[in-house]
Length: 155
Image (cartoon, rainbow, N blue to C red):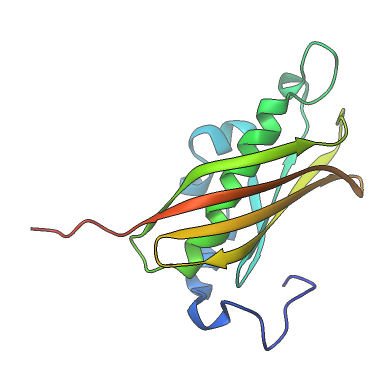
């Protein structure tokens, strides 16, 4: 559970704990595509919060020996929607509309951890903040908007 979680945690009334458990179990379905290639693992979830980690590997570095900014951006994009997913009705698709990412420090090795918190949740959009750390140092911060797309009716 996240450090900030209390009985009065925002979004607790709509949190799907079963879905969050499935997401953080890192089953094969969660390790597919770009997140799987990058090695992103969802490691913690609570109402309005999700954390993910990835190990910095040589193939994720730029020619100057630092983790490529696109890797950090992909990690941020992944946790933006993942934090919202257990809060919305099943079948709703959270899609990133935009995010602003500040790169604060280079990363050359170790584990990168992204912690994502839902700041606001409305009927059709959510705003999510992400802080990314490496070895206890803040290396990036982002704020993004998520579009909430309800399931299409089956006919």
